[in-house]
View (cartoon, rainbow, N blue to C red):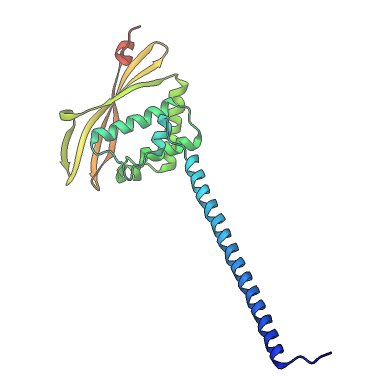
Length: 222
């Protein structure tokens, strides 16, 4: 066998080094491509997941859903009358609508957000829950239903400063079906106090109830 010259050995080594380097480059390139592909797939999955979550968020449609979803931190009623209108909506939903225990608790929480600090302290949540639950159940057992409600507006709302606190006085009235073909109008007197630039309920009481006709209660004729 003929001897291999030094020049040939050098040329062969360069060829081997070149091939090895080429292979490393190909492996590195393939690895980078794989990483990019994995990142792309992961990114696509995250986008699709976010879109799916958005599509699964149900837009509130019923009065119950709207009241529970209402964010009172950013959409609190601006006037005493508006506070009372929301109070009326919440109570009409609580007393008229069949709700789950969870929905009841959520509506109660919304009600308590209308309370002043004083009223919150005077009505611990658990005690408030049990009392309201019993009232609602009795109301339904008596076959009663809130037909409509209205709150004082304009000059009917009185404002006074008591012990350096700005207060407002107004009345909310309910038309109710009291069972069968009988109807009544019930009144509640409220005192609201200005607290952190928001009107909060300081106290309230039943003031009167009177029998009315179906026409007065519903605006329709028999």
